[in-house]
Image (tube, rainbow, N blue to C red):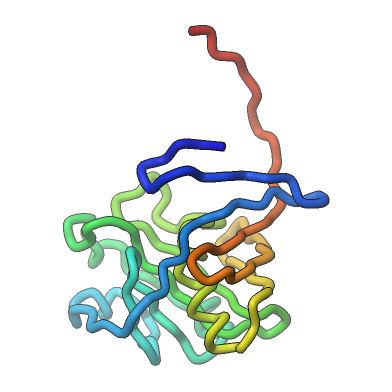
Amino acid sequence: DFETMSGPLIVKRKDHLLQLDFPSRKPEAAEMKEGLLKAFSISPKEVLKSRDWVLVYDSEADVRALKVNASLLSPKQFEKGGIICTAKGDGVDFVSRFFFPGGALFEDPVTGSSHCSLIPYWSEKLGKKEMIAYQLSERKGYLNCTDLGERVLIAGNAVTYMTGEIEI
């Protein structure tokens, strides 16, 4: 269990995956400033907002091919969060990419928090409570997603890259 700014974050082992329990953030229709939309090489078919902006595209191919001009996206233009680009997947339920202006990495490899918005959106669109998502960043990652209404479960593989000890 972790105490975070948005409340407790509970992580459990489920078979060979780590499962995180997050609050759901269903995105709503919104209008993004035209200047921000110009940063994307392909226009979305739908624009939504929760904590993050959610740009919905026609196809997985569009999300894969998407080029983003980071210089047109200043961190000052975003209160918190970033921009999620998503579409229905070809071999999975949905795909996404996550861009975070001003972050250490402009494109995040696999983003649990963005799925707090994607899971309720795609659950409603697809009429499913359990889905498989694929984040199409350079590193890529599959996530098992469950819509519980007020909460979402996000499960995926994790790789240990460091261990250590802290003495207090």
